[in-house]
Amino acid sequence: MADKQMTTESEAKAPKQPKVALIATRRIVTNYSLYLKHLLAGLADESVPALLVCPPGLDVDSIVPPAVEVVRHPAIDIPFLERHNRNLLLNRLAGFRPDLLHCLCETNAALVRWLARRLDLNYILNINSIIPRFQYIPISTARCAAVIAPARTIAEHLAVAHPKLSDRIRQINIGTFVANATACFSHTDRLPGIVVAYPPDDHSEIDNLFKSFHRLAIENYEFMVALVGAGRDEKQLRKKLRATGLLRIVTLVPRLPGFESAMSAADIFIVPRPSQSFNSLLLSAMSAGSAVAACKGGVDDPIMENKTAMTFNPDDQLSIYNCLRRLFDSRELSRQVAADAQDHLRSNYLVSVMVSSTLALYRQAARPPQPQTESFAA
Picture (tube, rainbow, N blue to C red):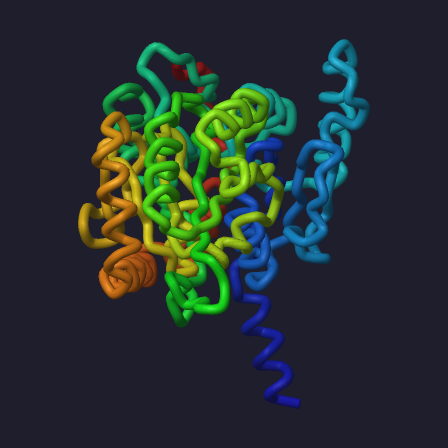
């Protein structure tokens, strides 16, 4: 009886977990599905009441734990009903009674700023890309408690380009679970697999990469390629593949939620162009133990030249060819690069650290807003 009473008193003294409403875009659910899955699972493990707002038409059953409520926005996906949809969302959130809002993508910054003002709440904003100095970011200086950057590159660029935000920028690396073994050239019963992450925000030409594949194929290197995320450029890419005789080797794969979990099939993962956004597929490939061939530039924090990745010049066909040929010819080197990348992730990209750091920000942000005149940062 005494033990039961002590347990009850201990629970009473424990801090109340904040209720949080997370607002996600289609891009977050599609391109950062493992991040979302790990964050929501971590919050559920910590008994944090959570609600996820996400677009309609997306299958999130494999991402969202049963304890997390899902609200679709817009409820009626017709452009001229935007005001009506906003009010519907406002009412749903008011019924949930969150202690704070968490905007998972800068695309929804204006919406969450409006919701925070109407609900009298603080909020946290994720910025997952390098934002140019001239680009306006609709942030409330009174209610935005913190800006989360998933990479040092993004955090440093934000601080320089948008100095008004510098005091609230927090770098929290996206966490991942690292495989115990490396996937690189571990399947001797099949052709080596290459996965190429087509840049989602930079549709630059990748002719040099295709020409390198063509040259390797002529020299009797056997492999299969999955080109992920071509999207609207699919027709143009098929023409190029047909012209270079690569249609039998290269398959175009849509970027779907949960694709990151299939990265263990890649022996080599290629980043063909610098990306201005954090590359979650790169993180998944390194976690699975794929050997990475990449170019430096953009958000390239996990890429350490000749350690976690072999690098090349994307504008130099010979540079790409030599990099890939080296990985094929020296498989021991490839496996070592993959293993070093996994070690780097184990030290710097832990799911537990991501969840605990985010939860600490939640507890700070859930405090009542200080009375002040609200203004907006650019």
